[in-house]
Image (cartoon, rainbow, N blue to C red; front, side, top):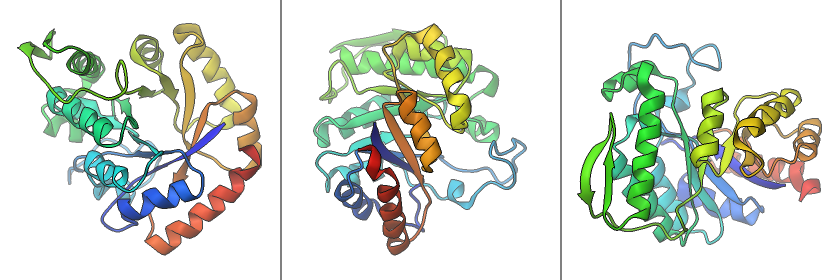
Length: 275
């Protein structure tokens, strides 16, 4: 079982150039960053975690800029989004951003994706929340075309372009792995279609086994399971290991540098017996 970190990088916590080497020094193999383009002042969509929306949601750095900074000071760390809000992103620009990150990192990019939850945020991007699933799928298919074809072309209900040139191409072949977040049957169909991994979030460890069985019925045995914002107590880690989870992404709170390093030491100690 491998261990990485999922977190929100903001203007109030540790910087990316300090975080990346700290993770490698402690044996973590992946960093996934959350994304929110903005938070509308007037919001009706409830926060899925309950209560008030945490401060970090308002202050996230652009994930690809931050991951590029991490790439420049690390050599082995996988660098990904957890999750990129594809329904709020232009697919041509996004394809170039992920491919550029893969190039400058030497083939370490991971594209973690999901449909998102904040409807007011989506609407500011001219996205109809009721169609976000179909929109996401089309944009990801278009991105794959841009990554894998010298003359890429796509014609759909939401994405439509005649043949184009788009470079750089990703270093990884056929393209960077796509890790799919969510827990619906449609999520599992996405994993089957284009996902290298299923990335559950917020699923209690005791319930994860049944969810994995549901996913396997649709997507088969090929996709890995990568637990996002995982718990790090001994019982939870034992459960993840028993279920054959490939990678555990421990949640790292957003804190100043000194506090973050102390937390990372605690997390590294918690998982040391499983390496």
